[in-house]
Length: 107
Length: 122
Image 1 (tube, each protein chain N blue to C red):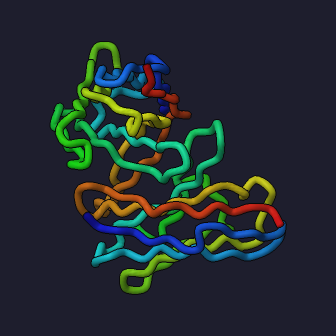
Image 2 (cartoon, rainbow over the protein chains, first blue to last red):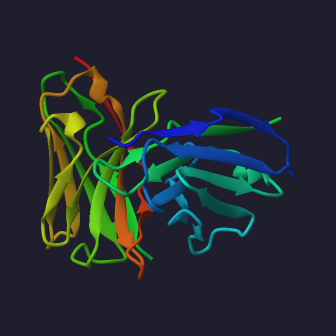
């Protein structure tokens, strides 16, 4: 199975900050990587797919990038509604796997 | 706008079978896409369980050791998940999701249900 290592596991930031979450794949996955936002009691939300394509309706303060097997999710100008847990997922090969998650908390 | 809603028993006895349904509204389950199940155990990350295509083809995570079965009911516009021989390790929030592709064949899960909690306990 392809392992995805996310870092950091926890992140404390303030409204207006810029944060970066990293996801490193154990082997090449081309650009078959997506990012999701999870909040308690709500349906998970797709943010980014194909490593850097912003899903329809997602604010432009979210962006994704790829360098080799390292992927990043960047959130600029954090808003209160952005405090959540973020997961990366590889869709290159079965079984599809997720990173262990990054919990973004308000400082 | 497609919406998904999971339903099923919230409590299942050990060694029993977990059965969940995902109702699709605002769209057809027969569309040219796949439908997936994902779960999250308490304090853990997300785990992909498996998927079913519009044509009924399935793929599963080997971690479930062939205990999972995904099926679909086209007239009722829903798909289902069964996991047999459950243990406490199957306690989780279970999500259903739509699995789609863009024009460049990049895939993603773009519509999710809110999830349903299943506890395995006697």
